[in-house]
Length: 111
Image (tube, rainbow, N blue to C red; front, side, top):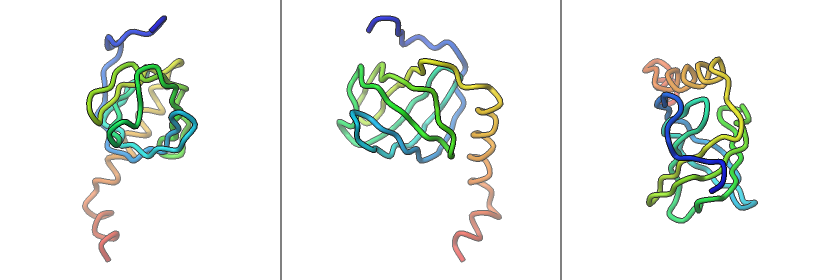
């Protein structure tokens, strides 16, 4: 792949959100495993993406930068963003994920 590397340029933050994405012009829901300013790791169904596929994602209502799949291993894939996601946006997404883990919030979902 020209212009893309799989080396990690920024620290990844763990994240556990369901993400609506588009790969090969079709909607795919994936789990966001981790994220950084320059990319992320996602988990989908077997064969959901191939190296070189372009991907768009909406994470917690926020559009992520356009990305490209740089590696695939079973159900996991690495995405390199073509732009950068601002650190404040990452903080917001991580806070959303932490709120979903809040026991009080989970209690209300079970009622």
